[in-house]
Every structure is written in C-alpha cells, then in structure tokens.
Amino acid sequence: MNNLDYSFRSNISLVLILFVALFSSSYIFFRYPFEFYFHYLLILTLFPVFIFKNGIPKFLFILFSYLAIIGLINVLMLNNSLFNFMKVYGGLLVISYFFYSLLFHYDFKINLFFYWYCKLCLILSFIGLIQFFSFILNFKFGYDFSFLLNKWRVIEGGLMGIRVNSILAEPSQLGIVLSPAVYVSVSNLVSKENYILNKFQSLIVIFIVVLTASTIAYAGLLFSILLCTKTFRIRYLLIGILLSVSLFFISYKYVNEFKLRVDAAKALWIDNNFEIKYTNNSSFVLYNNLNVAIKNLSDYPFFGTGLGSHEYAFKKYTLTKSLLNYDFEFNVKDGNSLFIRLCTEAGLFGLFFIFYIIYYGFIYQRKNIDDSDHRFEIISHSLLIIIILSLLRQGNYMLNGLPLVFLLYYYNGRTYKTLNE
Image (cartoon, rainbow, N blue to C red):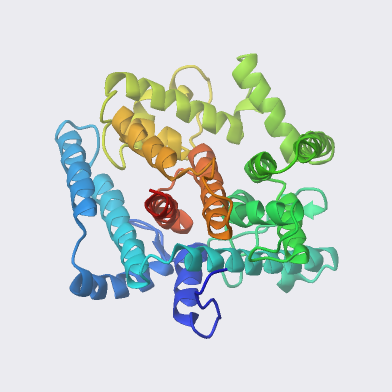
C-alpha cells in the first residue's frame, strides 16, 4: 500500500482525533441555544493553533466570503434570522477549516486518512456486533449505551428486534458513515485482494449494514455493488443485481419499518395519498421538505436564501399548514436531505458547486492499471457513495465529519489528475 507508515503507534494522534471528530456526535453538552457536541471541544482547542501555524487558505477565504455576503443579504431581506445564519455559518467555517488544516498538517496523505477511516468503521462495526448479540442475550449494558451517550437511544425493529446503530444516534447515520468501508468490503469480496480489510472483516461490515434495517444503508450497499462490478466480469454485475433485488424483497417482507417506508413512498409520490398513516413518517418528511425547497428555489433560484434559512422557508411553505388537516413538523432545520437543504439555502449556484466537486473527484476510467491508480479509484468510489447518501438523507452540513469527506474526495481526484497529466 505504498511507503506510508500505517501503524497505530505512528498515527495514534491522528486516529484519536479522527475518532472523536467523526464519531462522537451522540454526546452533547447542551441543546440550547444550539447543540454543543463533544467533538466541538477538540475542534475549538485546535482551531486557534491551526490558525496561528497555517493562516487561512485562499479558497476557504473566497468560499466563506461568498457565503457571508449571500447570507447577510438574506438576513436583511428577512429570509433568515441573524442567529440562524451565524450559527450554521460559524460552525461550518470552523469545522471546514479544522479538517483542511488537519489534512495540511499531514501533507494531504489521503491514503493515510482513508485507511484509518475504514479501520475506525471496522471498530464501529465490532461495537455494533456486540450490541446485536447483547440484545439477543438480553444483556442491557451491551446493547443500550444511553447511560453513556445522551443523544442516543435503542431503536427497536429490524430483522431481530433491534436496528443496530453502534455508538451513533440513528441506524441511518451508521449506514451512511460505514458506506466507504462497505464499498471496500464489497470490492474485497469480489476480488482476490484484501485492501485495508480482510475478507472476514469485510463480511462483518456488510453484516452490520444489513442489521441497521436502514433504507439508506441498503442503498449504499447497492451502489457499492454496482460500482465495484464495473471493473470486474459481467457475472459479478448480474450477481450484484440479483443480491440487491433479493435484499429488497427480503427486507420488504420481514422488516416492518422498511415495508412501511416503501408503502408510504408509493402512496405519496405515485398515488398522492396523504392519509395520516402515510404522512406520519420519514417518507412524508422528505416529501414535504422537497416541496419546501422547490417553492423556495422558484422564488430565489440562483443563490438561495443563505445558510440556516431552511427553517424559515419551511414555515412559509410546509404542507402541514395548507394541504393537510393535522399539524406536525420534523427536520425543520436540516430538510432531512443535504440536496434539499442546498436547494433552499444555496440555490442553483450551490448545487452546481457541489456537482462540480463530484465530477472533478470521480475516477471512472483509469488510464493505467497499476496498484496506485487502483487505490485512487477505490477511494474515489467509496467517498462518492457517502456523498450521494448524504445528499439523499443527511441534512446536516457538519455531522460525522462530512466536510472532511468532501476534502478527501476532492484532493484524491486532484492528486490523481496531477500524477496522470
């Protein structure tokens, strides 16, 4: 895996920083006036150190100057409150700069970061495995971590009575976070190599994803199969499609939460049926927030209404105040989807920026077939999947280190292009 030193002893500081910064979001110190996560202590401690040593890179200065101008203009236009804007803007600025400086400190060694990201995903999977078997054995302290994590709860349901979420707040979060390791695992199982994870470890990661009983986690598994089989023989593609279809029907038949979401999605998107049984769930949350984003985008198409403004747009356009006779609100602040939130808060310009990054960092046809190029491709595909899943489901710009994912994806593509010019 090239000449980098991947040992834990040599990288203990990086590993601990990554674990805290990426996977400690289930503990908060307070909720109001904003949620103060445990990892904020680490970030705020190192932030002034990085500022003093590295200064501010030009591209971050330009990007956040633009976001500040758009945001403040919309505050003056009463499309947002100053507090909402500053809360999201300040948090995103600090966290993005923190992860950029961390990469800078380690000389943009993308392979090293990706290696330990996948290893930490394996640790999350082992914790999930302990959680699952503890539940089967009725050992409460092995599956219920609420005594340690105050933004965490046991999620009932799934194939065996519990939806595994490891130390993350929701099974869907775990499914999204694990998706790069899922791609690596699928790649290992359909090839003869053991990249980062061996075959047994790869099976554990995939097993835990199945136990999340999360639609978005299953989508990540499907994307992994489809992307992996691109580089192998056609029979793997056929096997992958067969496995994906089988997984869908098994989940629909035996996982009640999955069935309810599929039925609700069909009722809302195809039949336009807004009965309470179809609207009191996450399918309607997505449907409603998309309606909010479309209406806001029609009024402010180019630049949106600024960071943190989805909450204001929701209050103006939610279907729970017009179409429906009952009132409930979910995911008011984050839109339940990064894509939806970007439509509202960043407009077409923001969407173009994100899709440009996706295009720039995607490696599909490798010019060479050597080992190093193959690593670039694996990293590109793995991170692309977590970005897609976040666009579909996760509306928080900063949750579980999403800015780091975008930075790794971009610089992986940039390094690959530089080496192959």
